[in-house]
Amino acid sequence: MKFDSVDKILDFAIQKEQDAADFYTGLAGEMEHEHMKDVFLGFADEERGHKTKLMAIKDGKQMVSAEQKVQDLEIGDHLVDIELKTELSYQEALILAMKAEKAAFRLYNDLASATDDANLKSTFLGLAQEEAKHKLRFEIEYDDSILTEN
Image (cartoon, rainbow, N blue to C red; front, top):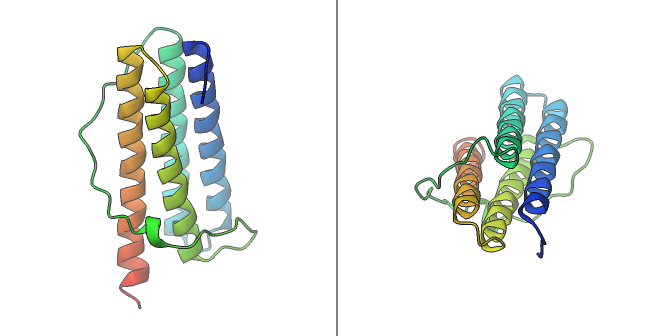
């Protein structure tokens, strides 16, 4: 990934957060379980919060510091990819969400590597850890709801 300015890096990250919010809103609409609908809507809100943080950073108003490393259960890492379709099972939705959060984590680590700005690097590493937290929450839900049933 090559960017020729910090603004372009931030614009890219802002768009990715909007895409993630749209993704989770769409998943929420597919859920029969009210609990999971609420979970996915909550994640959409968190992604919009990340977008807001990035927009504030772009405007020079706020920086986010790197957070402590989050544990990775690696459950989603060993599951087959799921194709996005109109009717998803609960298990499929969780797998999609875990894989999306892992991709977001990698994206922020890549963006951190793409900048020489120490504050921006710290911000991206902090956002990577927030995405890792999201993945962990989906992995715990998968472990509690899916793996314990089998």
